[in-house]
Length: 280
Image (cartoon, rainbow, N blue to C red; front, side, top):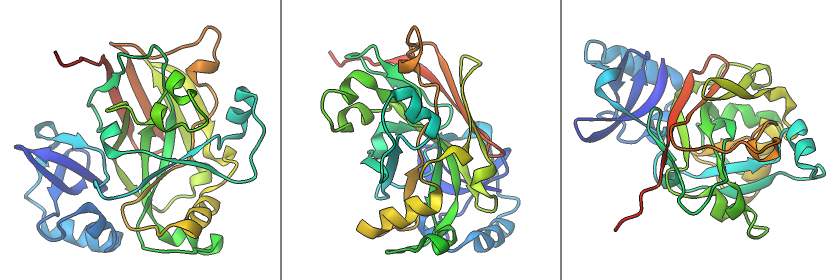
C-alpha cells in the first residue's frame, strides 16, 4: 500500500492506495503528517478497517503528498556526475534551498511553462519523507526518521535561477514542478534505487541514487542541526546528470511535452507541460 493525498468530489483527503483504489484515513487522523507520525503498521491496520470503502482512482485527482504547513527542502548539486557536467567543484556542505507548495502539482496534473522564460528545464529527483520529529539527529539514527519516499520533478527556470547567487526565483514559479504520485513506505536501501527521467518517452536522466555526494543520513543529520524536522517534511535529494541546459543544443520543455520521473518500485510521476496563461 502507498500513502497519498487526493481530491474527491471537491474535497481534499489523504489515505492509502493500492493504485486501483484509495482508502481515506482522514476521519481518524485529519492530516497526512499526523498519519505519518503513527507509523506504517498503524496505517495498514487502519486501512484494513477501511476495506470495502475504497474509491476507484479514476474518480480522484492526485495531489502532492505534502501538507501546506510542511517544509520542502531541496538539495542542489548532489550527484557527482551532475556536478561534473556543470563544471562546478564539489562542495564541503550540502547546498540547500526551500520551495513553496504552490510551486508543485500532483501526478497527472499539468506543469506550467512560465511566459517570461524559454528555459524551463526538467529535474527528476528522489524525495525523502520524514516520519518522526527530531533535531540534532545523528547520521547513524537518521534512517529511523524516514517514513518513506516519493518522486519529484523539481524542474528549474534556468535564466531566473541565475539572475543572482540565490536560486529562489528560478525554483518557485507557480505549478512548475510536481510531486508524487504517492509515498512509498520505507523499507529499501535507497542506495540501490535507480532514478529515471523521460521527456516524451526518451530517457534524459538515468542514475543510481548511490551517486549521491551527500547520502540521505548525512542530509538528515545536517538539516536537523539548524531546524526541527517533523512528520511530513520533504527532503528532495538532488538531480543527476543529463539536465537540458547542459545539452548541445539545450533541451528545454515546451507546451505539449510529457515529463515522467520514476524511481525503482515507486511508480511513475507523469505530468504534461502547458504554457502559462496571463490574466487579462
